[in-house]
Length: 345
Image (tube, rainbow, N blue to C red):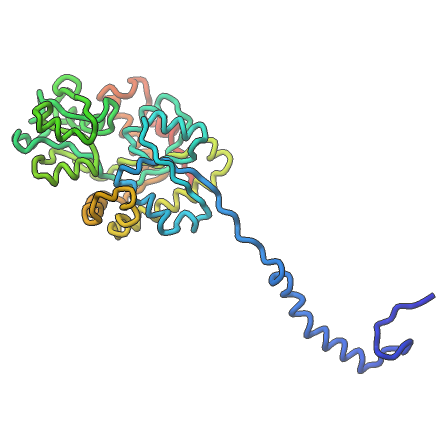
């Protein structure tokens, strides 16, 4: 039988003490490199980014933080590969796209989303993102400067489910007017609202930036109210919503997305010019100064979650009942619980 022995240079010789010491020394040198070898030769690949599709209306300047989150690498920082989907159709179509998985998440106006959510779309709001971006303007020549002064007047809007119509209906009701009887709401294309006033077909417009901001710059309009007026000064106007199936399948992705957008909101609040630079490719005809001015007038530092956003949703629901947008039977508290999902808890 042949016995395998360590090779010492002398066949069939027993290892000497010196041989053993040399072998031990060689092993001591080799071991650190052996331990390091796996990380050098087979370094683990970086974690794959989670792909998500985010639907938003690129024509709304208040969405600039979404563009900033991508431009500044905040989505990647949170492990996401976010693809933008420009959506300019109806809110019902947008929510249906999210609910059916054609998009994973959406950015939009709360007063546009809440009625479809009352009707049962399978989408959850996960956060508010900012306030300010909707304005009610009157023709300067009309002399109208107050909500009460709009009684009996024609207000131009982009559609009958416009969030601007919902918002100012609520404010008008608080000022003693019946928004469904004391005013005439007429639909015109958004970019032609000013022309309708110039032609005498309306005395005011209810719409959002950047369109209303540009109307104000002409000097032909005055601002009567906005969604930073009165009780809305500390309320959101826009929200982030995700498909319910994403919450069930990958809540961590929804958490990461919300965290990235919150960082972008704070960056926008502190440096609106940087957000304007990230957004300008979507609005090339608008100067950086104008974009930054609009963003600076909005409350991007206000992005509530948890009980704070639930309270705001419930307040909106109660108010929408008073102007006959929500069903009288809708319980605002239960509604807020149903349509909100806390992904940051």
